[in-house]
Length: 157
Image (tube, rainbow, N blue to C red):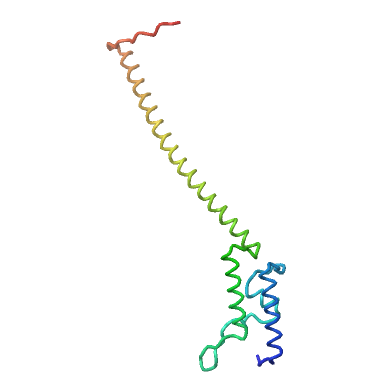
């Protein structure tokens, strides 16, 4: 791509600044995000103009609008750090992440409770089985005629 005139460069910079202001106010286009790709589209410039370029000798030079991209990202980070949510999808994603974390915690708690109940159930079944075996043994002894003392029954009311 050839060089652009100073007038076009100034006009592009103004368009980028205006688009950045709109995006940072939350005026996002349908399907757009608050990012460099949307900024480039809104300003009518190529996204690659925001990134460094390589010279033919391998040295790196800044992209023509890299300073504006850095300014945009700095302002966006300041807004995010202050708690301002520009992109409603970002807020929705955070809400869903928080909800997912709560659900995972509930699931973990429920799994722990289920494991404890299974252990209790196993212990109860073991005790019932032992009691049943003892009852069967005592019945067999009584049926065989061995001397087993009957316990007195309680007084009836």
